[in-house]
Length: 356
Ligand code: ATP
Image (tube, rainbow, N blue to C red; front, side, top):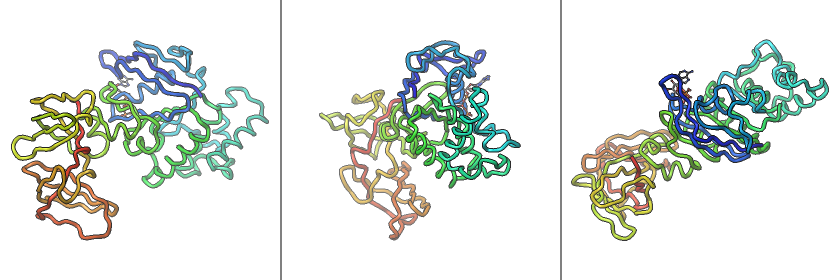
């Protein structure tokens, strides 16, 4: 397993930038995810690491080795694509063996390695099956086996679950995580699905329009988003504009025009947030952090909308003309109803002050 370092990477396509001034340091054995909406530059970055694109500027290192312009087949990487790129009329064994044959391993070695990795992905009995006789989930595992059999230093996964249905996606993401932990292979994962990214990654890089917005652990990204883009892209968020009216020691008071005045904590803020009296600042409040009943930031509101999803209940609540999303876990009790007047609390630790 190897570390991957991208230093000041920019990729231009004519006048259009794919990615700009990218700096990433991925640790050996890390599960690192590129997350962002369509067109943000995830695939472009992955392709540069694979060697299919060369950067316009900057350098790429595997450990200390400069691989910026090294041929893809000399990088010892395993790749799984969204469409798997398997040979449909060949068997599972033939598909898995492909990379080993290219590398001129002996027949005996190939058999031993293919058998071993087929067991690893739990396709023990399927060696002689043709690809077009397998389910989508099984094909996905063949693609993974084919990438792993060459014992890559780095595993690159580009939206590998997007062709699977919801239930299978969940099962497969656990399976990939298990394999990755077992093998300890440095893994770079591309997805636009934030739940998948949160569930699988050691660290996530959130991208938008070719730029890095934030790099951090799933908890850091969720609990301490640096800016409005990250706070709204990851999970649900109430992102509201407020003006800071006072700062007293650790305590900050902010207002949303007339009506709602909330207390927060000075240190519960992005390094990019303008934490000074008189400044306009955006505040992120997660729906699940709003509590029923009064408290340190007690408010009154009216229920405008109720959505029951089984595990949770989602509400829209009007508070002095601002609509807040609120979420609670279903415990089998009575639900609130549209029109109900409620008291609620937004704990001071739940206000997170964002950068732009
Ligand atoms: P998706 O999730 O849709 O795959 P992405 O985040 O992987 O998106 P990229 O495919 O990396 O995004 O694209 C980043 C930007 O670079 C986009 O604006 C895209 O239009 C542009 N781009 C990517 N490849 C090329 C190319 N070969 N020629 C011209 N522009 C390109």
